[in-house]
Each structure stands twice: as structure tokens, then as C-alpha cells.
Image (cartoon, rainbow, N blue to C red; front, side, top):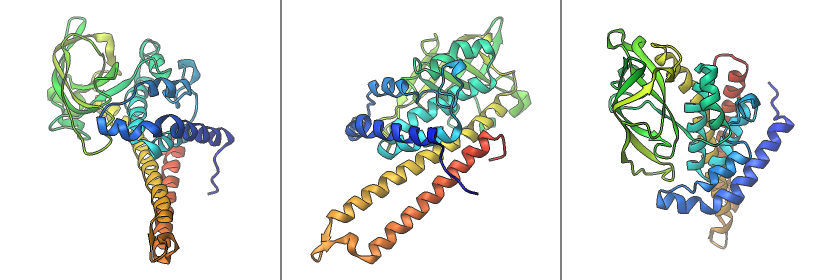
Length: 312
């Protein structure tokens, strides 16, 4: 299959690369060392449309496809993985399920400020005994009158603390097992919703990762996302699409590492010449480039399949 980026995709690639090199790259190492993200960068990313790439302009998104989304995540990852994780978790794990499963009222209230960058999104899925295995979720949501009451703890939550809007997975009927899992929209500042410990990670440290704690946290029943019992389907569908963003992130990190390796090979000298002159080094670099390009094309193909509503 012949594959070529469209003019719009090429322009996006150049725009994000130029932005990342100018605005993010000079701050990336310091942010990682301090484990603190410069949130002025989020405002700038939103201004160029990175907060809502795959969502229609009806909801103040950029109205682009999933290949474009993968390209943007890749280019951010090339200089700063924390920046790409911020965008990926916001888009794939929070805004997308609201767009796909939410009511029109929920989209107007939550998706629009997510897509235009006024708000930041996150998802609360992972627990000590539950992650991709959403069926092992222990957090509960009990309907009490016109409200659901949430109790439980989520761990390893990307964008936690900084996010304004959360998609939370909880059990509404234990007897139904995975068919008794539901999804909810919870706003930061809701009484009973607090943050636990911050995780100190080995990498991607400028991206905040916290526990979420729910203690008799009451939310309106209108904040049920989809129908009761749809949570397992919602999370599996959401994670499938989210993995395209993770793949794009990996490609971008690899591309950045590859370019650093090339640059180092040109300045590192042994026996009176740069090591790049050694054929053995050239073979290594060629193998790296080949594997990165293969991964890139597989990622873009997955995005294309999703755009065309085909299995990916």
C-alpha cells in the first residue's frame, strides 16, 4: 500500500516539531529533574490545537484524524515524553470516551472545555488489583436518590492533581462482575474527592502521577457516562484507541534517541576520527532507523484503520 502524508498532516508535523523544539525542548530536562511541568506550555499547546486534535470543530476541536493525532504525539515525544503523555492521557483517556459515549449535554459541558484546552482531563482506572483487567475494579458507585456515592482508591493516575475533569471507573453491581462496571465524570474539587501520594518515577517525571481517593464522594446521577453496566465496554474501547497514542509516544522517544545517537557518533572520536566513520557504527544506526520507520508505519496504519472504522 502506498502511503504518503497529506498536506494538512505534513503542515501539522512541521508546526508541532517547530513548536516542540522552540518552546518545549529548552525546558524538558529541567522539568524532568524537578518533576514539575511548566503549565504555560499547555496553554501554548492548546492555542495551536493540540488539546483537541481528533474532535469535530462543533466541540471546538481541530477536526483532524487519528493519523494527525499520532503525528502530534510523536513529535512531542521526540523532545519531551512528559508533554506527549499529558496530551495523550487528556485526549485518549478522558475527552475521547466523553465524545464517544457521552450525552449531548455532557459533551457541551465537558468535551468543549477539554477540546479547546480550558480544562485538562484524566482517567481513573488503575487500582492495586485492577488495571487493564478492569473487571477486578473495587471502587464502588452506589445510587442514592439523585446522586451516586463513590468510594475507593485509584493509583498511578496520569495528569492527576492538574486535571479538572476525570473519567472514573467504578462497580455499580458486584453480582454482575464485569457487566456491573460503570463509568462516571467527576470534577476536581467535588467534596469527598482528594489526592493521595505522588509517585516518584524513573522517567517521564514531569508528568504528575498521583493516587485518587474517593470517600463518600457524591456526584449527580447525570454524570453517569453511558449506561450502567457499560463501563467495561467503555474502558476496553477507550484503551484500544489509547494504545495508538502510546505507540506514537514510543516512536517519538525512539526517534529522539536515534537523532541523539547520530549526533554523538559525529562528535565522539576514536583513533583520530569520529566513530560515525566506522562501518560497524553505521550498521547499528541503519538498523535503528529501519526499526523506527517500521514502528512508525505500523502506528500510522493502526490510526488509519481506526479512522476507517476497521479492526486495529
